[in-house]
Amino acid sequence: MPYDVFNGDADGLCALQQLRLHQPVEGPHLVTGPKRETSLLRKIPLVDPTEITVLDISLRANRSDAERLLQDGHRLTYIDHHNSGPIPEHKNFISHIDTDPAVCTSVIVDQMLEGKYRDWAITAAFGDNLIDTAKTLAQKTNLSSSQVRKLQELGELLNYNGYGRKVDDLWFSPEELFWKMQGYQSPLDFYGEAPEFLALREGYAEDLRRAEKAPTIFENSNLRIYQLPDASWSHRIVGAFSNLKARNHPEQAQVVMVEKPERTQLVSVRSPKIHPVGADEICLQFEGGGRPAAAGINDLPMAKFEDFKQALIQRFCV
Image (cartoon, rainbow, N blue to C red):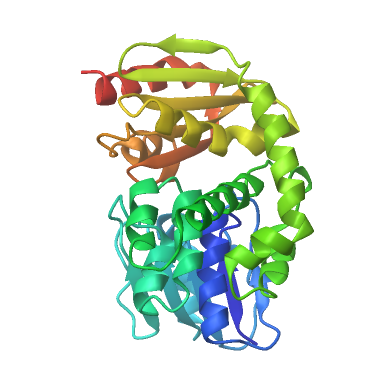
């Protein structure tokens, strides 16, 4: 039985949606989790060699498990846009990895399928805050401006749903959302008919209202750092809030920190939209990861906050 392994955010969902609309697989095993849960290949149990499709999760964070699965005879198709590190050279490892800051996993799948389900790729690009990429793709379609706005809202809400400390923090598990999405050829139909969409819209509005009251703990013309409390709503909204601030202040790097127990912080970093590089470089220094435009750290000890802040200043303010 094949395995589909995917990030639980808009990009992972929409990438798999395109692939399975194009090539349905009867009863695949789904392996996923909240957006921040990236070490997903370790969840695959000892089974006979099979096909494993991996979407929108960092190879760097899954390298040892990828190598183990290859040694066990599995065939891996790896499609991703995160900082990967060295790519395995193995006959059973098929790589579609592109770290261009203007590309997300769903856009890579769109290229592979020659635009067959492009509306889903546009949705994902909006969800990943790749606004220019999404609009460029939309120009190659017959979508109206109203329809494009709907895809943007849907992408942002699917992405918002992926954030949380654990699945119980999310409004819907990624598996549940994927199976719901499978009933719709078009994201516009999902937008207009799925009750899950309305639930996400209402939840997002309430969480964003709370986040807008968050204090700024550092700010200059190039960098702003926000602080959110340890709460389910904070962990749900952190990515969407980071993306919103990045769009509204394209000249600044945006950092949103969320308190966690035991004096650690979850961190979301967005490079300035006018020069979207550097976020992954910073986060990798503190055992995080991501891509040039957007990255994060799951557990930043408070004792390292000053070092982290100075690294941000050196990267974005000097």
